[in-house]
Picture 1 (cartoon, rainbow, N blue to C red):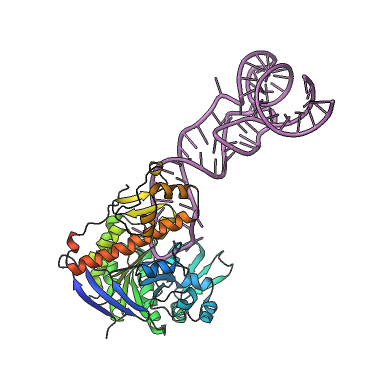
Picture 2: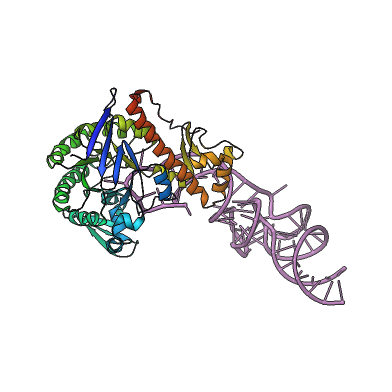
Length: 365
RNA sequence: UCCUCAGUAGCUCAACGGCAGAGCAUCCGGCUGUUAACCGGAGGGUUGUAGGUUCAAAUCCUACCUGAGGAG
């Protein structure tokens, strides 16, 4: 039986409610995966994620290859055992690092060579190597190695990224021998024709799932929304669609409506550490002086342990004092908020009320 | 009572005759498959006080005030 089943649809949009079966439990979609690049969701314990019914986290094969290395993870019995997480793990292959570490890599038809200050040595990543890593880690969802161009980028560069990503997807599929599901990634930047042209060859390869990549790398919000909607429509109806790296709570709702099923984003954890939190009322920058004596919780309707116990004034004080608990507590709230937001989206989908679900404002409180 | 040293941004200190600066703090902005508990911007001064020397003084001189240390 195909691991992805859809059992409810939104009559007013392309949104669907599904289940993705993995070797480490069911992922109820639409689903948000907290980002744990190096095998830890920064500031948030796995106990909490389990308690909050988080079904999957994202890690990064490239970063784990650099540190601690595949031997260490292999000796531990795989990535789940090494990090102590029993539920599903999705690993990105390192394609994003081709963009984010652009100053320290050389890209060729064969693969990409990274060299940098992490441990002083060079690391070569090919599609085959990325598959070997992810297979050895024993992850539940592995990603093909792709090339993620930044925005803005020359059209020719985006076109080259599309061709390489397609070629590398083919090589990834041929090389992957792991226990998980392998997803391919659609590129094309903001160019509708490149997206349209890139999708069919990938679909011909018949991956069990497809991702939309190269989104939210510098474009406007409008571009993010339109590319996402276009790309989702190019991907198979019956397979999971993973929108990589997106986004804000409002982005997530819009993308669910566009037909996406899986999401990850650093915003809840990174912004939590930076003192920026998401609430039903809007976004709160906790360091602002106006919260100095605000005894209300971050979000009065939030049921997270931080909002149940602490006031904005207290959290601001911790943040201003640089107490280690501040970034942790704010990340905790944000991750809870994201997981809860996706749960509300799923419930609305099941109840057929998604159309009426209001997105949290992106304005500041 | 005398001697020595020190007083510069909220704090710690630079500048030692030639445009008064930095770090931290404060305030503001940014962050979308993490090189990020990060990056960027702004505000903030009668240089302890009062005189003097000089084209020019935070800087040199005099007195006073405050603080630290020492002597008696």
